[in-house]
Amino acid sequence: MLNFQSLIIPFIKNFINILFFRKKYMIFKISEIHSNSMEPNFHEGNYYIVKKNSDTKKIKRFDVLVYFCKIHNLNHIKRVIGLPNEKLLFKGKEFFIDNKFIKTFSISDSIRLEFEIDNNSLFLLSDNLSLFGKSCDSIKNGPIEKENIIGFII
Image (tube, rainbow, N blue to C red):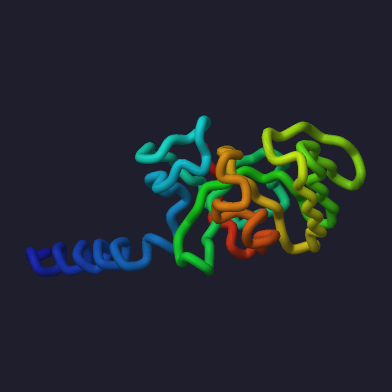
């Protein structure tokens, strides 16, 4: 006959395992936005769901990702602008990828920035261009290594 102790001990062990090891195995995570760097699309104080994904081959241009910033020891939400092995050029208000015009940004006419993205990195940019060069993104910190990508915003 089963007693109370033989039933409760496995339950407690499983609960402790879930409590301490859940971060590694969780597929989804809910987080809060702590800055205005992604406005007007994502607002400070809003919550978002991150689908954790280690398969960085599925990342496409303009996806919104969460990555871990080693400089600030924080997670940040940013948009994918550049993919591996691309050359990016911000020339005045114009943006080029591999010498092909992509779009016009509302930034300074005098700006000229060039970036080469290696095979293991992505170029992530804030949506709020009034913070151009001030936000914790690839303009300020260079391309982001894929190993720092936490997941996709859903």
